[in-house]
Amino acid sequence: MTIKKSDLFKIQLQDILENIAKDKVLAMQKFRKDLNKQLFNLKNMPYKYRKSHYHDDEKVRDMIFRGYTIVYKIYDNYILIIEIFNQNLPVTPNLK
Image (cartoon, rainbow, N blue to C red):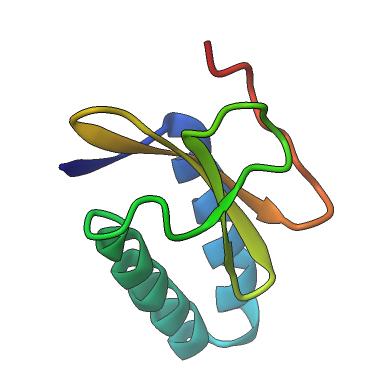
């Protein structure tokens, strides 16, 4: 199983990383490293995290990471990381 990242996720993550880096570059690097490790571990247990609060689909899950929600969808051969947002600000697109 592979991990794929949507364009929306990449843009949102870049914005988050830039904001963290304004205060402390090392904190941004640690955030990115730890997040990538968590995403990589999804391969082993894709259903580990809760069913999404934002979608009525058992295969769409919400991973909480340091105050951010990462929405992802499990497919047969891969996991698509859809978006990352502060838990108060969902922007989730239609997943059909």
